[in-house]
Image (cartoon, rainbow, N blue to C red; front, side, top):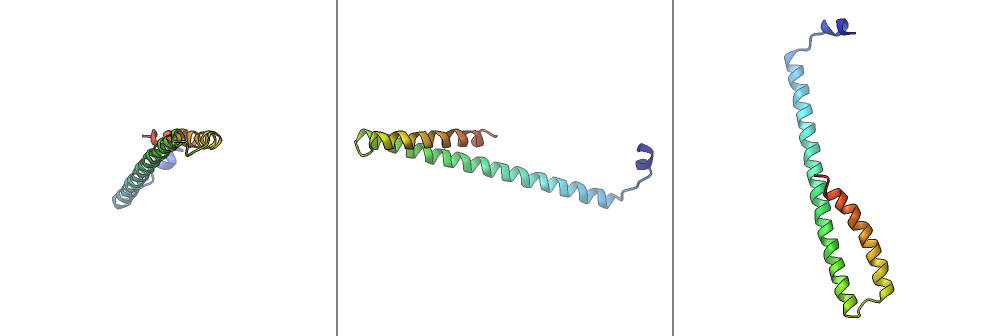
Length: 89
């Protein structure tokens, strides 16, 4: 197969276009990854704020034990998932 490929000539402008396209794709992918991590971190911060507020509501007897337990379980699952996304740096 090497002998078949060695006789192929790719013009310089085609090589440049391919490299430029690959570089642009890589830049877009990195920007998207960064945006996803930032979004996950923001959502994690908002979730933790909500958890803290719910804890204060529980202490102030505004939230019963059953609701507190159910919501905290849901939020902890979300927190674990978001931590995974946020740590993908």
